[in-house]
Picture (spheres, rainbow, N blue to C red):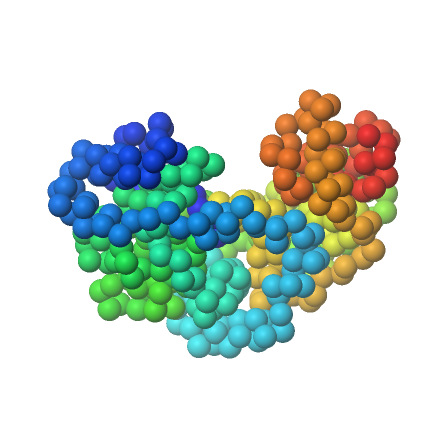
Length: 389
């Protein structure tokens, strides 16, 4: 799970969050962290103990810069992470933790399948939670100047957990980006959204599945999940659909999509709900209706391919059939995608970093250029588009 800013920033009084320092010598950086912690009311001696074994972790930086898996297309990524074993374990865990998952749905309105899918993708149901030192991961990514504003607040959240006796600077481990436990939550989220799901008086996200599932659902609910509503439904679409109206940045009611020939493979959602037609690999590939809850997934992770796969995986656990692959045009290679992004940027589009990843801004630019060139505007980049540009 990619890290997010949380209410922990306000909770911990990090008034300097808007202008955090990064880079420079690590020792100077640590002095800044200590100074801020002391100014927020923590005793200097406590901070010294907390930071006694602090160091830069080069493996964290390597992991941060090598997220090549998100360059896979939806079909490739889904086939890689959604295995028969994970589906089987998901069904087994649905039965094993039925009491907790029923409580999740009754309390937060989050379908059990949604939590099971996150649990599976994040840690394979708790089996692989990561062995990175959590404090050093947070310090490393805060010292690094790529995204310090996302990580620095969680240093102070970890410090708060340390003062409570719930965090060890030397023994607490997790993912490379500082997340902890079965559903990979950052320290700030643990403080603001952690839930004692098993009633033992502690929030133990590494060892208690009920704690992890309830806490994860609380995070999702806090991001605006609409209780007991669907999130993603596979559809078939007519060949003459107005492709320029597809994409997550456009929506109409389910009834309006149905009037245009869109059909669900299972039950069609409530006709009054707003929905977007999602074509992860263009008009020739898989097709879905993305409902309002689908956008909440982006508060958990910013990757389009991860979000789409996690949402689809949840539908599979809930009983949906395997998606229809279709016959989409081949994905561009990494070098071709970067070339496309450079060409789009040269035409004035904001595609973000030239990274070879087909993100939301690149998709929007592709769709706009397809429409301008009289091509089917389905936001899927092809060699033909690249050649025309």
